[in-house]
Length: 553
Image (cartoon, rainbow, N blue to C red; front, side, top):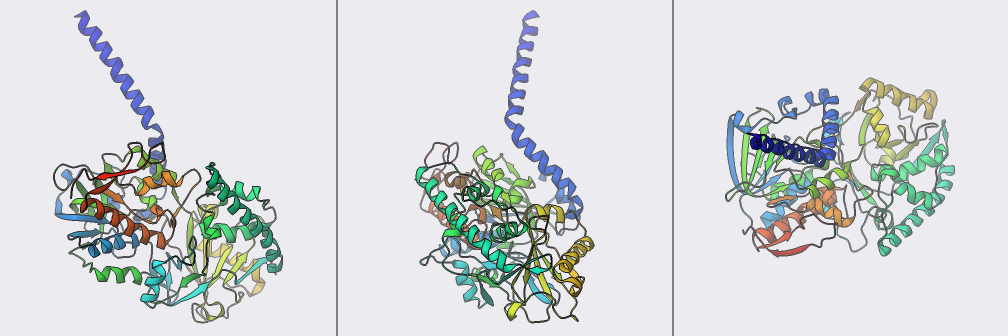
């Protein structure tokens, strides 16, 4: 009896030790998840207005066994997401001769973060709006430019130099231009510093530090305003939250002006055109309104991927079984815990996901009464210099400036909110935002200013299909560690703008990533050569090796 008691005590100690060490191991991730869940609770009211059935918003995803299964679809390759990355991946696999590819999309449309709506009597883009040429030289091919020209979309070149700066009601553009020379000299020094760090394998620093080392330390409101326009507007984030080494090339390599898309058919036409060439047919190889809640990627049998999704209209459960899967979810969705992975994703995959973030960037369209004459400057970019707060309601885009984008009399301005300013604005009601915008207009134009008639605020940051606009490459993520984002976990592959090494945060990056991932999957499933990710992931003292597939085709 004494022996049994001692044995029981010993086992209790062992079990207690295991529980404590397990808890310590999971603590950082659990803390992140608790923070995310708290955030989800705060914006719960917004979810009720979203396109997703409110039952799906609950963090505790019920087991599918507790619900009736509406359908089970079995396929060769399952593509999750019908944005640019997902549609491009499906197209590339089709071009390679891969059959039985099914695309699952949570919303009611193709396009992802490329979306147009009607507002103020015209078509406006609430998501992606430009074709970007950063990180490109004269020999670079921009697939998005090709698609735009192939679709004959209306666009105009945008060098971002048609601007005016207004401070306390006065035009201070000349003063801003003089300060710009100092800022551009500092940018040149940051490029040199980045090159040196790459050559000498030095650690990364944030862009705020790099600018300070380049002798740029903004103090005056105008200095802060030109930095905000040149940096925050492009990156969607502040210098202190942006890494130097992987972002400096955005300044050093761009040989063409960006293209601003303004077409009544919508920017998403280029993605729909790709889908039509497959073709993707709703109800056959395209399944809309299916919000993914769980991904099991290590099941037994010939179809090791099992995806559970709920129909956002009926709430019924649909099961997808696949040999291979390409997942194109945004970083925001992956960080939200709204999709459950079984087993949990490897630590090297989760770590890089949580290191990235979605930028705080939102476009607010502002409609003024149609019976007024435009009281604002006839420049494409109107910069409001707030005397106290950096970037507050600063970025105004005149969509009918010089007749470039929209007809005269449309009376719509586009105000872009980024960074900490969005954190504050997101807590305000529509009428309060309109009132604050009116005060800004009065500060710039005096009694000529008129109260906005209506505003349109997209829901990218609260929509559970996106949870943000696009990703930003943060400080501390090396190019090697970044490879963990797209690296496959068994038969589960990943693509999207965040996975692009050169063009993250852009539509071009999403297209490149979708095509590249499809190529890698094809090489693995058909030719038997698969990426063998190091056990600890990339960037931890291991080199990538490629060997004959363990999985077969």
